[in-house]
Length: 102
Image 1 (tube, helix red, strand yellow):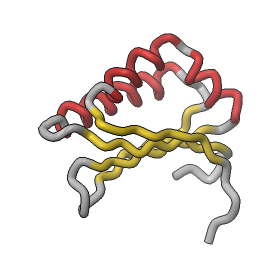
Image 2: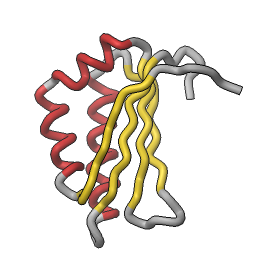
Image 3: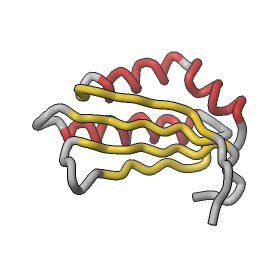
Image 4: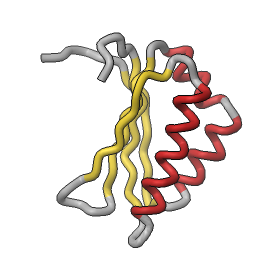
């Protein structure tokens, strides 16, 4: 991920059985829009838990707190996020800032 990352958004997604492929497609659409419509966005990843087939974790890197906050305030955010969330039994998201690295 980018060296100038200052803030992170992350989500822990528990996808309903049989919905994984659709979830990945919707998440990709969501983050493609994010990349196109949000200047402070840097990069994102979606990783899959090998021990729990329905579990995914997402990470999105942001240049500054204002860009991250502005992203969540756009109407498209609510629509695209809800489309992903609708395929999940559980979802927990939060924002983070770096503490240290090795």
